[in-house]
Image 1: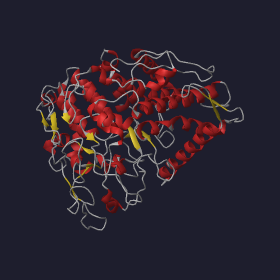
Image 2: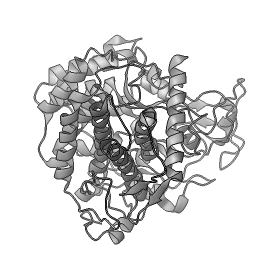
Image 3: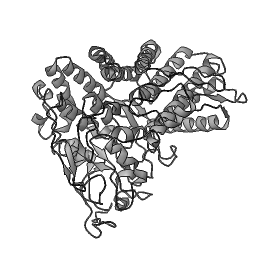
Image 4: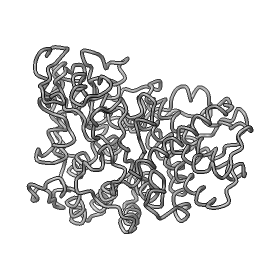
Length: 547
């Protein structure tokens, strides 16, 4: 397949450049702010594509590598959990802290998100410096290449803005030894990101084709801009609903060929690189993306016995699962419920029943049930398992599905949410219905949503449901403004690394309890702390409130 070959080529280039950069860099004191490339490396214009690819490679490490952004977004929310299992998954209590919102300045997930994201920024700054100083002689497309790199850098800053809020803005690469950046406010970071996107959009490619796949073209940039506007009320205190709608309309009216796939699952299959719903993706391939935890959600969620279900080359670890309260919000005729969760009796690839091999249910049929005693105890059968990303037969510990960062359904739903919040619920409902229609083919009437419904609360039955500690409360979700829309976001985007940000925007992240998580009612928890190690080495940094 032509597209598959391009995908592999992109990955080979990225890996080559990553190795080259590591091998030929002299690190200064304040890594990851500065990394100087060796003067022995004299790139030519032929190296341009590879070097730009190096700017993108860090996105995967930020999002998917062990204890990274994906876990921070999902395991802190009300949809997914990593309970303690008889065979492990306590890991110094980090997953317990994420669920309970008691993370610390020393937690790996905090340190990793900071260091990995700044490494991406440094990569961009290095390449921009090399091009602007003519270390990379670019004769054609120089302005477009620089614009692409600046928008890519803005996407990294968007992670920091959402996660930490108040962070240093560093745009130079040729910095003096011992450089310690000044801290910027969250408002300044937001304004910087928006300006970088707006200033550079006109210079980006309008094409949606093989050459722009996995890169920031004009429409991916507009989607990033829409995301910033969508969360502007959280980031700055001033909502930007109209501006978000305009950015979404730019993509919707682009004529670039983005559509809703007939089947949502098509966006997440192993060979998903031809999906017309994907706007910006991380190209993945098990043969080329070779670090151990490159993309291993299947390993984190499947039981050990499920190795025989998919003929996996490695034994899964049996950890992550859905929170039962979230699963209970689904209409069971919804294709997203049917296709995206592994449930019921498990079998080998040849159809033989699987039986539990360890824990309290040893010897009994391996039947995944929508039950979980609590954060501190989960047996083999407890919790539905993740299946949004297709698990290929014979897969290694790394999946080969490209990871969609932005997709067309997200653009439509951003526009719908802004219309709802801007007093146009019926217009919002038309869009939400459009997105739902592919999920209720057997009963099309269920796809229809009204503006009145979208203005109602959530169907999520919030409250403690901890059987282990005998803690039960009833909170419900009726008091969440536009809670039905939050439900819609949950059904459409579960397992995609969105949930924490969405819950914060709807005011539920700190105010609601679920499973073994007690509401903190602490607004400081909408930001993570700056890592203690960063505070100690840079006295210009001030810790976020409450840490």
